[in-house]
Image 1 (tube, rainbow, N blue to C red):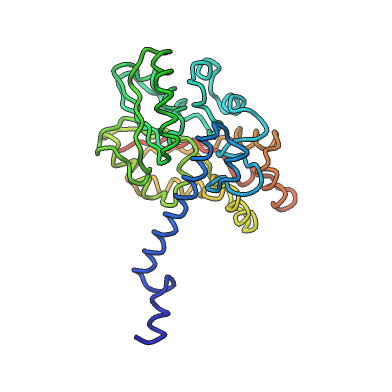
Image 2: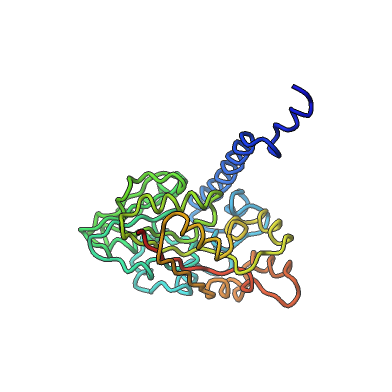
Length: 312
């Protein structure tokens, strides 16, 4: 083999090696995200050690965003994005870590008896809100790839059952690109500020379509881009937090969902989250503002997005 042949078999020009390199990059992203959220689960909070641990919260600045605000409480954030005081009052201690950017249960129209799947369930926040809505005849499954988050969520089940009398929530270890759920078994898929963390979002959407029953629904809140972020912001944000750097354009989200076979796709930008982060001077969003072109602000580029869809 010549030197030129050897050079050509690098990621730049050999399909096999390109695929292998892509897998390696995806695994590295997942590893960083897992490390960051493991730290959040261990500390029980969303700043300090979590920011220094790497993953989606890497960097020396105490970052906010979907990895958690550092200038206000999880309860304040949850109320700002639409959770009711009664929902928060009944929440097991520590389940709400301020990792939300929307309220997917509010758009899910959950009914008694339904099977609900929450992607990236963390400490179980949205699962414990969904549980009473589907009742004793329904079931809620949370999937998370971080063992520490899974342990935290499972410990919260006892408190949830004590308060509600229900035993309808379970948590499974797994990646959202490879869901540990059988085909056509779920009525509703929820997710809250998690899809943006995935290095293979198209596969996530295919997995959502796979596990949904015919006619099943999607109710997702996530971060998305209204405009491409300036390159200097992207490169800076990637060093701080995957929750913004990993977001894609709104129309790219629509295309990925449609390509997976979902229909009746409705995308609703919700500015309250970004406005709250900006107004409360969250450190990450202050850093973004400093890097944006003069006269612009984060909400010109980034939005929380409610995503509703249905499987044919």
